[in-house]
Image (cartoon, rainbow over all chains, first blue to last red):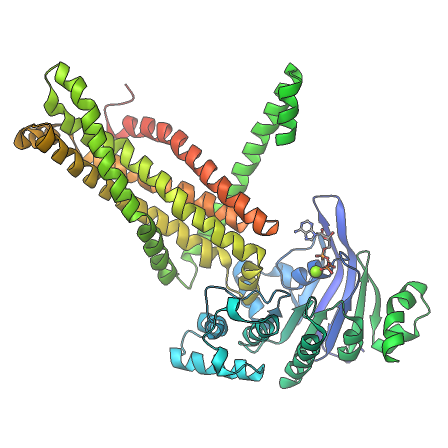
Length: 255
Length: 277
Ligand SMILES: Nc1ncnc2c1ncn2[C@@H]1O[C@H](COP(=O)(O)OP(=O)(O)OP(=O)(O)O)[C@@H](O)[C@H]1O
Ligand SMILES: [Mg+2]
C-alpha cells in the first residue's frame, strides 16, 4: 500500500452542520491513484458530503484534504476553481444544462477552459467524447428533456471527461435506473476507467453487487467514520457482524 | 416564524408580541447580512477573468426584451391618465398648462423608475429566481462549480450588471413615452396649446430630474436582481421551493423598491436639489 501513489487523502476530516449535527466525525482515507474506489454506506451516512469536501465545495471544520498532495485549505477561491479542472463528476441526475443541446453541454467545459481552440475544433473534441460513451450523432442536437435517463448519463459522462480529468467522481450513477441501463452504465464506468492509464475513479454506490464487481477498493462509511477500507475480499472475509449484514446480500448473489 | 405569528393573533399578550417582533427584526437583519455577503462575494468575480461580456449581453437582451413592450404600453397610459386627472384641478386655478411639467416631473422623478422596476421585477426578477432555482435543485449549479466555472461569475454577476445597465434605459424610455402620451392627450383632447405646453415643460424640467430617474432606476435594478439571484441561488426543496422563492422575490423586491424609493428621494433631494426642505 505504501508504494502506491495517493490521489486523494483525507485526514481526520470533521464536519458539523448548524453547529450540532456532526456528519463527518474524523474521516481518514487514502484513495489510491489509478484505481476504482467505491464508497458504500447507508443513506445519510455522509457520502455526498464527503464528495463535496473532496471537490472543495465544502470546507471541513477540522482536518485536511489533499488532492495529489495539494492541501485544499491552502487554496483561495480562484486556485480552487483551477484545481477543479482535475476533476470530472457525473451527478445522479446527470445535471445537464437544460438550455443547451447534447453537444453544447459537452462543448461547454472545453470552450470555457481551452479558449484558444476554434469552435470547430471544440465541436470535434465534444463529438469524439460523445462517441466514446456510445452516443450517436443523431442525438447531438437534442435537448436533455428529449433524452432517456440512460442517455442523459452518457452525456453527463461525456461532459465529465471532456477535459480529460485525472479524477472521476460518480455520485450514485445507477440509482433509479432499471437493471438493464444499470448494467450499461456500470460497463460504461469500467470502460471509461480503462480509457486512460492513471485515471482515478471514485464511485458512491448503493448497488452492492455492482460495487463489488467494479471496485479495486471499497470504503464503508458509517456514522461519520470509515468503518472499513480495503479490497472487496476484505469485506467478504470480515467477521464484524455489521459488515456481515451489509454484504450478506452480495454473498448470496455472487459468491 | 409564521406559525408563531399566527399564535399571537389568537392569544394576544404583550410580551409574546414583543418577542415575535424581535424575532422578525433579527431574521430581517440576518437575511440582510446574508444577501450583502452574497452580493459582495459575487462582485469579487467581476474583475476575474474570463470577463463575461457575452452573458451580460444575453441578459441585457433578455431583461430588456421581456419587459419593453409592457413598459411602453403602461407608461403611455400612465402619462395620459395623469394628464387627464390633473386637468380638472389645474383648470380650477386656470393653470391647465402646468399639466406638462407636472406629468414630466412626476414621470421622471417617480413614476417611470418605480413602475418600470415593478414591472421588470414581476417578469425578469421572477424569471431569474425561477431559472437559478431550477438550476440549483437539478444540481446544474453544482455541476458548474465542479467544472471550475464559478456559478456566481457565470450566472449571478451578468444578471446583476445587466439589470443595473438596462433599468435606466427602460425608465428613460418609459418617461419619454409617458410624456408623449400626456402631450397628445393635452393638446388634442384637452385643447392646450402645444407650444405653451412645451415651454412650461422646459421651464420646470431640469437635467437633475433625468439624473434622478436614472439613479433610481439603476438602484432598483440592483435591488431586484440581487434579491432575484439570491433567492434562486439558495433555493431548496425541489420544484415547490422554486415556486415559493419566485413568489418571495416579487414580494420582497417590490416592497424594498417602494420603501427605498422614499429614502433615495430624500437623499437625492439633499444632494441634487435645494436640500431636504
Ligand atoms: N448543506 C447541508 N446542510 C445541512 N445538513 C446537510 C447538508 N448536506 C448534508 N447534510 C446532512 O448531512 C447528512 C449526510 O448527508 P449526505 O447527503 O452526505 O448523505 P449520503 O450518505 O450521501 O446519503 P444518500 O445515500 O441518501 O445520498 C444528512 O443527514 C444531511 O441531512
Ligand atoms: Mg448522497
